[in-house]
Length: 160
Ligand code: PNS
Image (cartoon, rainbow, N blue to C red; front, side, top):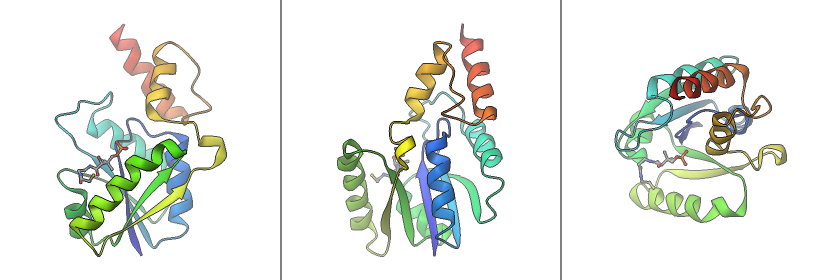
């Protein structure tokens, strides 16, 4: 099975890496696809997110890092992916994730969404919370790999 794991990854955290690692052990190929959303400016540029993702997933041989714009279903079809993978942390994620899964299924009935339950230790983690901690000078080394930690420090240093 070839699956796509789409997201903003702004930036990638240990929570994402956990999903990538565990999913890559179950599928033939996993395409991690970063949404290129010009109308929503993130903290990191698309290129920066891709560089970080490539670095932190380089040990996973069947993982490909890519980006997409437009509809996820169109992208999945173009890439030959038959499944979408999304991580589920808490019940609070469920409503939004279910809505996306149902809409995507309606658009393309052949595309299935699989939810991967987060590991308990990353159940509270999000890119937004990591950015907030880092922005105020907190230590984020238990949330993100060193290269991401450094990128966050540089990003917020320049803004002060
Ligand atoms: O990490 P995120 O921000 O929760 O990821 C959301 C993402 C990228 C999966 C979602 O916004 C998406 O698929 N966007 C592409 C546009 C699309 O296909 N929308 C219809 C499905 S809801």
